Amino acid sequence: MRKKSLLPHFVIVSVLLVCAEFAIAATHTITIEGMKFDPATLTVKRGDTIVWVNKDFFPHTATSENKAFDSGEIKAGASWKRVVDTKGSFTYVCTLHPTMKGSLTVN
Image (cartoon, rainbow, N blue to C red):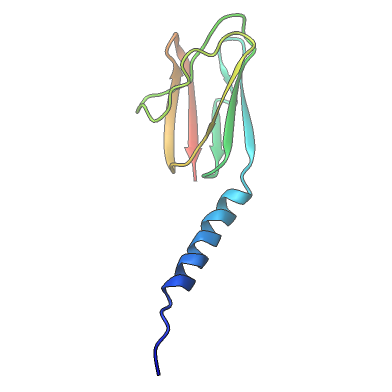
């Protein structure tokens, strides 16, 4: 009697688990207004989308200190979004206004 490989089943289950994790992804908004990020601290899940919305009258950036992400200039009235796929804690700043700081934790 020939043994059947479990590898195809393992692959299918693994793909389904990964898809399930991303299927329940949420969208979070960080507002840039009054020279600050609001909320300044945010905890999200891997696969979630973060949208930075600039409501100030001048450009800003959202740049992680470890260079994991960099929005480039977000013009006044514009937004930038990113799907977070790496777990960890990320502090970020506006490189144009370094006193503006935020913190993002991805579980």
